[in-house]
Length: 295
Length: 142
Image 1: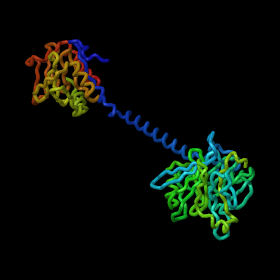
Image 2 (image 1 turned 120 degrees about the vertical axis):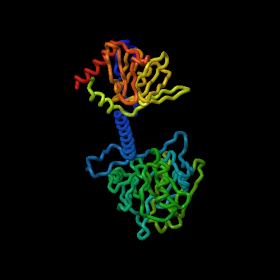
Image 3 (image 1 turned 90 degrees about the vertical axis):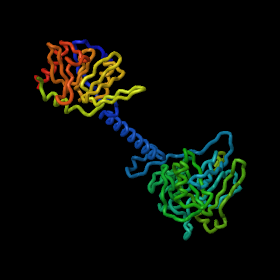
């Protein structure tokens, strides 16, 4: 530290100011601040981009099939809770003033089924109508694979759910290797409207309001979420996105039939089964069966 | 006597910056360029300005030198410490005679401080000799 009193009577010393000591006046300070801010912004953008791209994607085992091929969606495994029987945990939550009913299966695996389902089958934990059925020819809309068998073809709805080897994949792609894999491995596959993909809400053409159902993946858990009241596609999808659902595709809504068994073994059903005969040809469900059912 | 361009440059570079002295009871702000000289008075210092005013501040000369160092800009190199008791503004040095220990500080218009008449300005012959050399060197460097 400089001693300002250290001067003799016969000495002189030009006083040389160091400049304003305030660091904020120095140009290099602002350059450094700018660089740091820019670096932080780039990091945030990079992390956000990574978060958007990562969910639902794993290292691509299908890269050899061509650059244009969609990557494989990350599978969700059944929600196994030790020391508990298979059931559906039902809870309500409110997002954006929309009441969402959440059906989370426990100790149960999903699969597709065709034809009427028996509510008396105690192995079935919950069931929802899956793919839409055309009103004119009663055929299933879009690709539909049942235990490896091709039931229906079409890509009018781009999102899909594939159930292969007990793993559930939900994603949005017209061309996915999972379709072929489902056929090869005797898995299930159906198409529906995308609602939320990689955490982002998707817009869809259908207008109007109805009771909505969605097959969702949230934090690696597959669940079904429905609206309690009639909602538009947009509002429902936005509520799901705000509910932090990573992936969600539509399930047949409106008056579609479904049921679940609660923890108290109580059977809860909804919808209308009276038109089943009319749509028997294409009637299909996604059902969760107890892992102990020996299916 | 010395190179005018040196003083012109000093004057040109000198901005309207202030030296600020503040304590619990007083606030003193002096435009640095208008300081003619500062003389030590024990724990106090007397600041003489070109409007013939004297401001007494509670700070030793070393402390004031430190404040000049921190408060002024690098370009404001017109104040010089001469010995233990004096800081002069080079802008107003108009006469030096080391042999007679004589120095006159003036703007040749409104004020004049002559150490032959003003008792407070005490400068050694040797210090004035070095000061004269400083000016001479500036002239030679030109």
